[in-house]
Length: 172
Image (cartoon, rainbow, N blue to C red; front, side, top):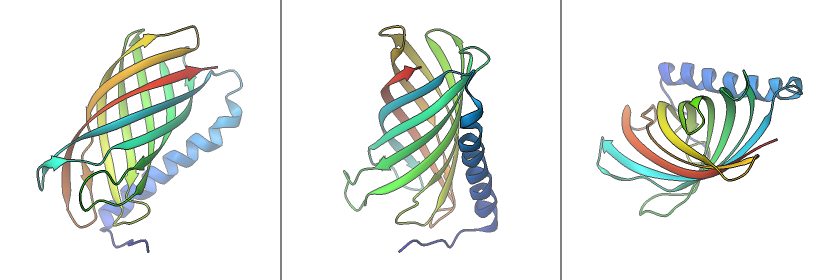
């Protein structure tokens, strides 16, 4: 059963995250001139507060679209947290993201996430990452990134999380 007992501040950020995700979904049909993208990745990381330890591995699928050439990309990450560490259950995250790629091999990513959607309590994540990418072909690339994606809400008021991610992306 979903535990939705979150603070009013967390509820505000939850609404912001859901509205951002809705904006991406609603904007999707109007992106005929924009390039559609799809990325798949695997990530994990380390929590430093309130406790210290590895976080669950997650697998993310992120459809998106580019604007301003390939310089700016909007993505909606749908992540599944795997129960690969003790006392963790399967869970789901939604992550609206803005990616800015000033150079063909270097990018920055801003993330607003809503986590713990299955088992709760719901948390809101707001973070950033820096990454490197390499082209495999005209439409495919591989990437690796490292970021800081802290979470607020739920049982813990603040969780400090560092995350690494590798994946493959496609542009159409």
